[in-house]
Length: 471
Image (tube, rainbow, N blue to C red; front, side, top):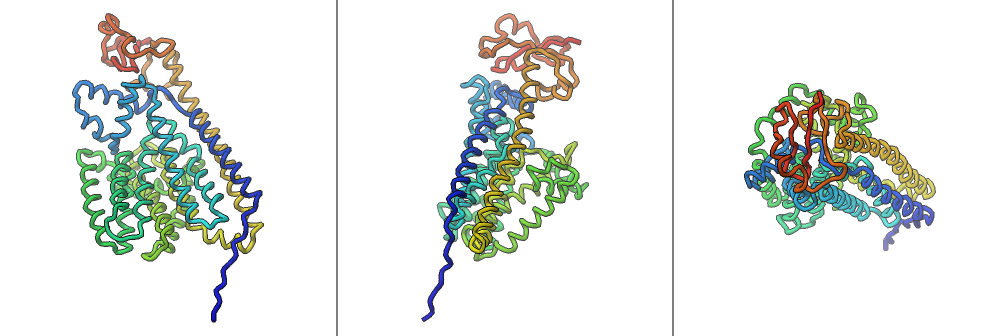
């Protein structure tokens, strides 16, 4: 009789386990510090337009337009709901927005690390899950949670990841409860950020690859209806963006490749596309090799995550070619590469397990180098992130105190102020909206910023202050 042989899994080194737990623990605490250190608790940049949107709501009472009206291709009802809550209940502190970003980032980190840990052999589960968590919690991604104008990216990303895991982790064909939840998550992801619409083709491709007709039909109906409703009322902005990409397809491709190199693309914007090309080739090769119709469950999830990030890069190439510096892909998009990184870890696990069985000492050393190297490069990234946040906060503090701010930094402080010579007159400590500039003072001042004289900015809101021309 033929006897089966089982390869003995080497025991995990005790020192490696202790190192992994220590590095992960320090990394988590450090990420929380970066979040706290980078938070901006005052409105600026795009938020000023959002406040105007909220003021229009107070005048019209039209919640549907307020919550669902498009903003730069996005529809963000959750974010605008949080903004209204912040203004009405917290006095405009940004805390609800930042808290929602932190929770979304934590959930996404947990989901990705959980999938990586499930796919790993017992000896690799802890370090592999830790590496996934560390890559997801890089300082550039934490900045998304700490920056109110970027928290919608954390909302959309975690819901897109949930949709992929729910759909690709299902073992039964057809429209099951798990896949109904995936449809809900995919729709909610698009309502976090427009680029998360990339999750729909990911689910469609996976369903078609497995020839799951019922699931494919459900995706076509639900996804088609949702995307059509999402695109309705967007005006010519979408067509203009796509037109710019078609006018210069080489630039659009380079932009997408720079996206794939995030968060490291900004080290060399002119040559990041080379690294992005290598990343894209690796991703496509992984999909071709491991995404067959009979792929293992964890491979299906990994390929879905990789394909989602590739789809986001393609959408960035189509949607940002019109910008002044298209190759300067914003760091806020780096979070959308976290699924790619975790997906590659899952697909690499069998090879890591073989190396560990053949050369245990070398395998453990490579794991330690990967963990320590990730922590070291994140410390450097955090230094840049904190410095950038300090610049924003100091500029806003100077502006509120009435000090002069350079033209390069005026735009984050208010609309129409790029070339203005203005001084903000504000109390030394924040006051509730109902007590600031009330009575005759408010009535005597114009709200028209083009009047040529002093005017009230955001009157009747927690952000109210007086602008006085000094030249």
